[in-house]
Length: 122
Image (cartoon, rainbow, N blue to C red; front, side, top):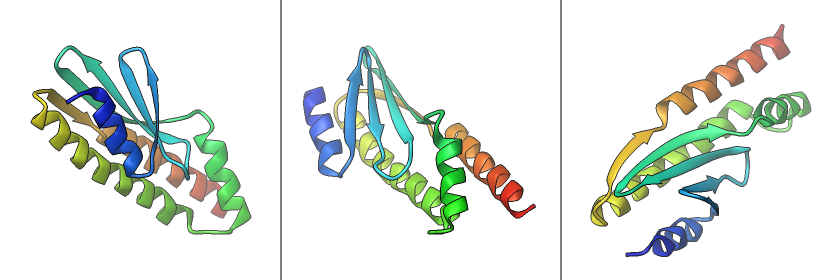
């Protein structure tokens, strides 16, 4: 299968995909958080990352009080975990070695959220 079929699968799940060099970036529509899929031959690394604007974005959401920001962040991370399961299957089925590195990004995002919530409550 082609990389285009991978992109089509990701898009069919409601995500936007950007391609840059040997990398695909899967964007989430609710937060400036994304999956980076980095290719190196038949090896691929999937990482959870975020834009520099995430802190300000979350701070604005907290200040607006319009929704439970913790639930929103957890939902987005959960959706990316579900997508990663589909990516894992696709890559394995197509002969790629896959290394999934979501935990570091997840921890960074949750620590940022915790810091913002502590400041807003204090």
